[in-house]
Length: 315
Image (cartoon, rainbow, N blue to C red):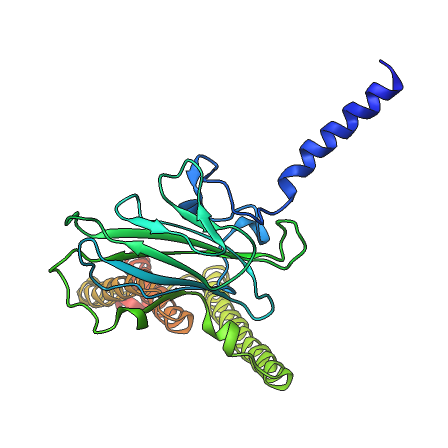
């Protein structure tokens, strides 16, 4: 293989690998990963290819209920704390008809979906409702705001907005549909920015709360372990050096066992309820310790009833 041919082959492969890295400034393709972009989203953009609540995607002028054959002026907008431009794609599942204006175009092979024709914002389009009542019309809108690097990287942010326009006669129309706006995103991320002092104060409060919670957790857990260990140690010393548990006559053991068993059963039910309802760990720990104490009481009743009678028990 000649040197010139090798260089040409390497350059061709490099271009093929690099091609997917460039953003679709003139509109995305209709399909990606065997799904349409308005449903799949711009998964080649952003961190991890996941939707982001840092971008606010809005569409204004959406009617609550459509009139057959009527046209509605819609405006699609993107907002972000840092970036100001991006792209979009919208589809109504071919129920109505879209008409693009400056900056928009029909998506190839989509059957009527629209997308941006160049990177921008605040796209004005027209949607014409079906000529007859076809039921509720569902829309899927994908929006992507970019950092201007020219490549679909982690600095870009995208999200998806789905909404429905009701069929004629199924809802009360708005007095002015042009004022109705539907959006998705985290407005606090855009408008609720906090000062460095507020952020630091919240961070310190979170650290203090963590120390308190962890301190309580370790303290009460350790105390519980020590109590259990002390009971076990007491049993060990009683059997080894004290001659075993004292005898309990059956006339006393039976009613005592019934009482302790009933209390323990109630505590077992309460402990299961605490686990099932995700009760705070402190309450669950208390119920669990009481349950262990109840089990120990039943155990003591049984072993004392089975213990050999001593001389003092026969007096």
